[in-house]
Image (tube, rainbow, N blue to C red; front, side, top):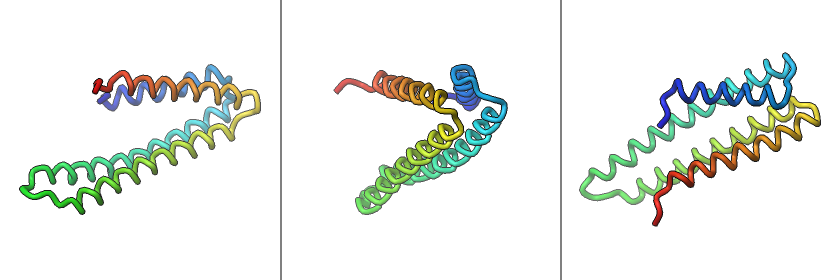
Length: 130
């Protein structure tokens, strides 16, 4: 995992990229920064819940008899939390897009496609072959 300072740097790099590529106004920059801070606060809270549920789930491995109902419940909760994170992210980007002029919005859409493609490629690169 990336250390917090590296994640923070990547987030700032993303903001600089949006600023540079979209030619944001001062007002847009302030709005983007405010949206970003709110987004990461929300995401952090969900990530903490995910970690708490994972700790409980993996404690089940140590038990002599696995409580399958508990495992099912925890994994469903984890799925729900991941779904919640995706929805938070979707609404975050939608709010960002809503701050833009039409030409900026077109560029923003292209940037998001590239960002998501890169993230997906990065995850695929780290998967082990079957």
